[in-house]
Length: 501
Ligand code: FAD
Image (cartoon, rainbow, N blue to C red; front, side, top):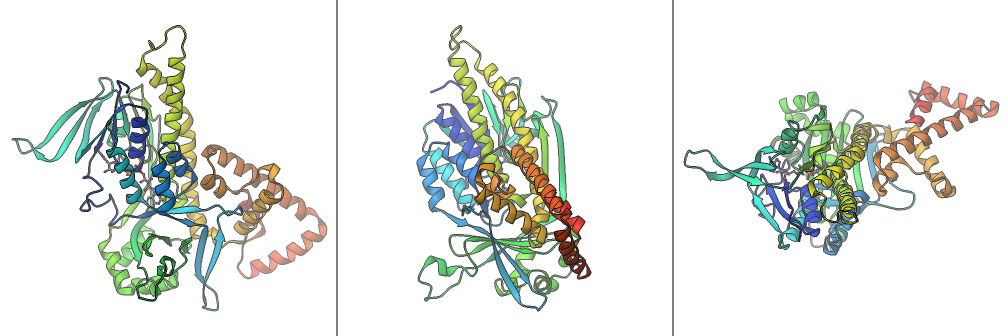
């Protein structure tokens, strides 16, 4: 057992995993959470009307694997649904409704639909069984002094004699702030370190809907409860907006409408237009969600903003660090927010472990080096490494909104995907992969993913130009694009530009 007291602020998925890593290393861990215990059925998950399903992929799973807790990994494999690709829904010019599967990966790897609250509860259960972990629910961080290593929490539901909520003072050796996008730890950290900070609200709001499972005695197996394929992330791309659906184990789908605020305002002013709006832009949805229910979900469920946050550094001295959304909230279009947050934990502890080992191996003064000083070195290294990667995935997430709502339908997108997958299968020694595969099925640094993908784009563009310069190919392609353009398709110049992205 170490003599170090680790305080974790926020018992979301990232804070819970950070607490588990710390507890496994023998530290005394205290977890302070603003809300009640998520395992209590009366506690509503933050921002969501019920638990939402989200896409869990390799980085998140790898971080849990490194927690060295087999029952957590067993839970992940048993309580998630593999999603092998996107199912694109639309309407052909003839009026016919279609669905088209686009596999995520030529090698058959999948991402997983996971129930966020269920995963969170599992982590809390595991922590609850550890003797060196203490929970403090309904405790809101209100202040922190990172030099003196003291923090103040308001205890909700316990008023002092003056009628104000009671406040307690807590000492700590190390604080990990995983308190989400509107992090109080980050706010107080800014007073101690010269933190650069940038936040952006994208002009899109989101609202949650649900596709219910099929009901009836003829449903013998679990799979027949799903109204649409359970092994896909369903997308209704609408150019300026989109609707998506992610499967849940009970046969339902958690759906999200992403729409510019002006469009939300129009529909809010006259919600009777909602079914017609869906029929026009998201064909087929009104046969999956009955129009009355569509309208009531739109009315009842909150219309929430999307925020993208970049800041640096993530730490102060050896006493505090921010992780997950607190450090890099991102728009959800790459399905990486939680995955990146869980990966933060793995990377942070790998660096902390390295410095702790260096301290123990020091032959001149074994054990005498100040633990906080060593941790300060580790945290500085963590910020230096992680900032570039977090900024890279924040940018990719913003770019992927365009890909999901529009590019998935474009010819250029498909050509590039085909060529990159072709190279991956037939010339594996070159190490080519699609950007999506690198992000979702690997653990390479996000900044390296961007660099490698940009390189592949440049090579493809050069190859494409070389082919165009061949006189016969140029003639045939020239005719093809002239014809496509006259039909309102993408210009040749746009195609070349898109290949580079
Ligand atoms: P949070 O989940 O926000 O948890 C923070 C915790 O801190 C909360 O429990 C909160 O109550 C507590 N807290 C806040 N303030 C205080 C305080 N002052 N004192 C004490 N406690 C406090 N990610 C993916 O990886 N894949 C997806 O498919 C995906 N889809 C998404 C879809 C939508 C619509 C949205 C909005 C997000 C999606 N995300 C996805 C992102 C994901 O939900 C977040 O990245 C993830 O929840 C971040 O976890 P966290 O633990 O850092 O923060």
